[in-house]
Length: 260
Image (tube, rainbow, N blue to C red; front, side):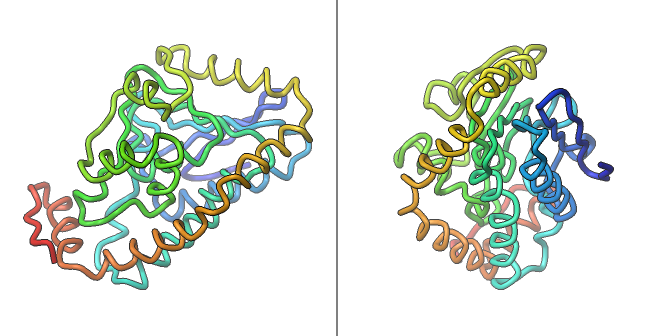
């Protein structure tokens, strides 16, 4: 498989998918999301693949967020469409996939990057990792499932604190609240992810797939939460605060929000 924004390799029964935009801190743009959809669809359909490890290129970032340049100038319908397409084709695809997906979080996992890691079934972080959802600093909310999956993982109070303050967590803090499963050194990151995956691969693939479906079914009542998130994400694109947040980001200055 040949891609421009990701790399795909297979060793044994493990498919490695690496987001390869190191100069952009592996930020997610529409082309990267399209390639992730293609790569995961093929991995889930390939009988030779038992599980997937997802990571980012380099040592600085797993994914530092969405490519904000693509948000400029969008209104309500454009914002809603971005959230709907991303959730459906990538984030929900991974979360509901029939094969285990482990995120090897190396460095920053912010915004869409943390949402991508949370869509995976298991998260292993390097000890230099930093995680957070900074969307409110742009006049937005998380739009790729973040409001729902973070709440499911860490609880309502901590999720609201993280989202509303936009504060970043260290890997150690993320481990303490259950946002990640393990923290190891950067050198041991893939080794730990492989250790977990190889253990899973000794189990029944049918049972593993059934377990994923059963766990996800227990969260089914939150479906309306995702719908609400998409709607509210789209609404943000029609606000002056969103225009100011994106302008400030692109101009590298502090935003001046008015609450409108």
